[in-house]
Each structure stands twice: as C-alpha cells, then as structure tokens.
Image 1 (spheres, rainbow, N blue to C red):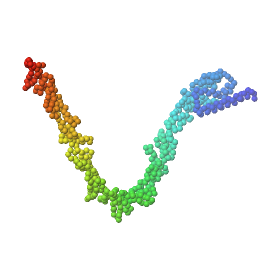
Image 2 (image 1 turned 90 degrees about the vertical axis):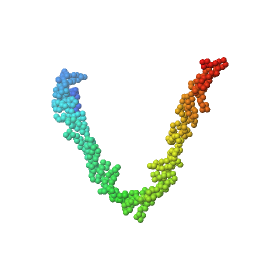
Image 3 (image 1 turned 120 degrees about the vertical axis):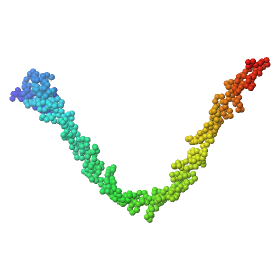
Length: 520
C-alpha cells in the first residue's frame, strides 16, 4: 500500500469516527431537550469531510453569512435556516420565529429549536403549554404533560391533585377523586385517618370524626371498645374508664349491674361481695330494708323490742316523735306546754326569735320587741340614746333630740340654749340677744341702750350723748346746750351771763351791770 493510499485510509477512518461521535452527541442533546436557537453546529457529511482534507477554497455559506473567527470558518445561517453542511444552510420550516439544526450524515434529519411554550410536533413547532407546574412534549403528534409531584393533567394543564401521603389523587369528569388507604377517609380534600376498629364504622361529620359502633361497643380513644353492663344498666366511658349507670335497685358487681335493693330510703352497696344497706338519716335496717326511725338531727333513734326510742341531746325534748329544740338561751328556761314551747326569761330579757334576749332601756323606759326590733318607751324628758332611755330636757320652752349622738335643743322664739336649757334671751324689738360666757348680751340699734334688759330709746339729740344711770336717762350736752324736753337744746346768754331753762323757758342770769338784750 502506497503512502498516499495509507493517508487516505487514515483520513477515511478518522472522518467516519468524527461522524459517529457527532451523531451520538446530537442524539444525546436531543434527548435532554437542550437546544439553543442561536447554536451553530458545523458537521459535514462523510463526503465533505474527505474533500475538505484535500482542498481549501474561499469561505462559502449558502443561505447564510460566512465569518472567520480565529482562523476558523463559521457559517452563520439566516433565520429559518439551519446548518446542513459546513458551507450550506438548509431551510427549517419549523414555524415562525424558530431555529433548527440538521443531524450529520446521509440520513440526517432536522431538529427544531422551539421557543418557550412550544414543542416540536412532527416537522414544526406548535404551542405546547401544561401550565407552570409541568413540562410539555409532543409524543409523535400527541401532546404529553410531565407534571410535578402532586399535580395531574386537568383540561390540558398540570393542576394540583394532592390527597396527602395516605391516598392517591385523580381527576374524573373534571372532579378531584381521592382514593384513600384502609383506615383513612377524605376530609377537606385530604385522606385523614378515620379508624374505629373492627367493631365500628368511621365517618366525618362537620369535620369531626364519628364512630358508629356495634351493640355493647362505645367510642373510647377513637376506637369502638366493648362497654357492657348487662341488661339492667347502660355503659359509658368517662375519662377513659368504663362506667355503668345501673337502674334503680341495681349496682355494679363484677362489671355488671346486679340487684341491690334496700328500699327507697337507703342505698345499697356490695362490700366483700355482701349486700350492705346505707340508710338515710332517720332510717335503720329492718328486715333487709331501710325503715323509718327518725328522731331528728338532735337525737338518736333505735328499735327496742320493735318500738321506736328517741335519745335527745341537751336542750331538746321529744315532740311529735322528734327531738325538738326547747332552748331559750342561757337567760331563760324552756318547756313544752300543750305541745307549745314556752320560755321563762330572767329580768331584763324578753323572747326574741325563740330565745331570751336582752331588752333593757335603762331605768327610765320600758323595753319590747316589735317585728323583731327592740323598742324603748321612755319617760317624759327622756329619749333613746345608745339603746338606753337618756335624759334629753331643754326646759319648757324648747324640744330636745339626739343628732349623731349629741343632744340638740330646738328653742322657741326669744329663747336660746344656756346650761342645756332653752332660756329667755329678749332685748326687745330694737336689739338682738345672745349669751356670751353664760351672760346675756344685747346688741342694740343706734339711739338705743340697754335698760332693764331691753334695748330702750336713749336719744339726747345731735348735741349730746345719752346713757342710763340707775335706770334713769341722762344727757351729757355740749357747751352752750342744756336739756330741754329730753334733748340737748341751745341755751347761750353770752359770756356775761349763765343760761338755764325754767318751765321750758330760757332764763339768763347776767353779771352786774349787764341785762338781757336779744336773748343775750
């Protein structure tokens, strides 16, 4: 074999190896769905690879533009075309705004690069949308949605369909269907546990689990559990414990309602397997029944030779077959007379509420109880103070009362309180009266002074002052004035004579050599 032939053979093997690897890479990329509409793949056919080893021509690119990058020829295809060979772009026909590529080799077919929301259907890209929760593919010509976990296809979209971890979800006629595992039922769109055990049927009512149990089974901790008290009682669970509610005359014995009757006046119990009667107050066991033997709460009853006997406590006596209180307290003695209680009380005590109760108003009043309240009837000039008849006398000219525990005298007109009595204090119509330090004081109007305890007129006119001396009115007149008709009246004879009034007339006594002229 010549050297050229060997070289050609090596080139043939190498080119075929490149073709195989390129084809496998394309298949792998196609399976992963990884495409780039701007990706350029320059894979030659087998023949182009061989020819390209022996020739170098000017850069060519059919249906595209040729560029040289770092010495390497690259054919960039026009929109709607994909690399068919290194120097040729072939139409894609994948639809608008799409790109493509051609697989290498003689049997290579186109691969479409579809935009978001589209997928290749046959030779072109068509809309393929399964919503935001799934991816869309065309399998042959059928749309296929690959939904995320918890989502299923409904109306061509991946729609949530989750029944929880204990059931499977599906859509039927557009409605969500949950198929739950055993012991679970659908509640609020989820498979929730609903297991009442083998003796009941579970359901949800208004969101709450309900167990419909078989006969003699009840719900306990969410399970139908046996609860049987026999035919004479009903069974229930309280705080997780079995409780038997037995009919009258029956009690629980060995988990069943068993007859235990002591009559209507006692309760029956089983103690160590033996019937015991616990009788009500006033009843004792006689012939297996609780029979009345009641002396009341203050006595003990017994049967002696078939007869009832009452032993009463202190201060109680038998009345009408009962130990009845006959207590008047520590201040009186009690007895029954003709079946009526009678209290004989000590002095100063009267019966109140069946007891000898103190009723003392003091030596100046008599005491009684009226409607349960103490009443004191006091003597004249005495009133009730602190429960006793206490002196309250303001004299004959006023009335007395106690206010807030203090004595108060309401005196008549012209009387005021003095030494606890209403005492006259009158200064007449021309003055006001008061007591100061126990002494009467008259505050008289102008021109009035006190005389004989009254405000009496005492007016000497404007030219003198008036007062009473030994009960008589006295005028102290100014110079040149003398008393006339009870007033200080002018009486002036000049410097050479003295003036006086005689029988109401002015008289001048002149010095020697002077006579009266013009009244002076």
